[in-house]
Image (cartoon, rainbow over all chains, first blue to last red; front, side, top):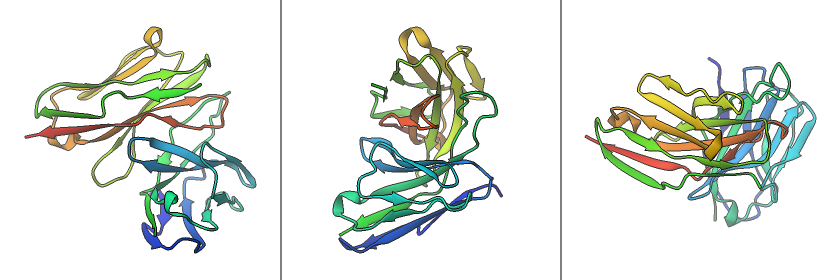
Length: 117
Length: 115
């Protein structure tokens, strides 16, 4: 089954304790991205990756790191989590367009609900 | 600035009513894409439709229809004969074609369909 998986689905942690949220897709998609969802703000992009070893900042990258060593995986790292990073996090992937600047639909993982105390 | 506005925070209807969710976007790009996603109470995000800026043809898919009007920068979504299973948060999103697939989301509209 084609899917994007995230782990863990729920996480409660304390300020300053490094954590990693994993994301994996089995659709051979080039593009992957992380978003956070907060009430009243919709989803905002944290980081994205156009392909292996190519990553770039989104709108709210502060406090986050990512890496793309393999095509299928795109982990999100919080080196020193703070309470304002309490949020619902989504990983997404999509295939690059085959002609020109096409933007294809993104497939989303199930979400990771993070609470930082 | 690029932006998506969904002015309706919450909408409540009774089953079988028609309901329209509004989406207004801002962009200076001539090439862009618009999307609608559904987020049911279970939390996942479900893709509904993609439309590019050169295709203003309206689309119908079962009880769902979309009205894209470049003149008013709107991409509205109508559910005909709503059902309880339509209860969800609906997001409209804009993707400029030159920004690596980035999605700019609206704030979302929470639709509640009561039996």
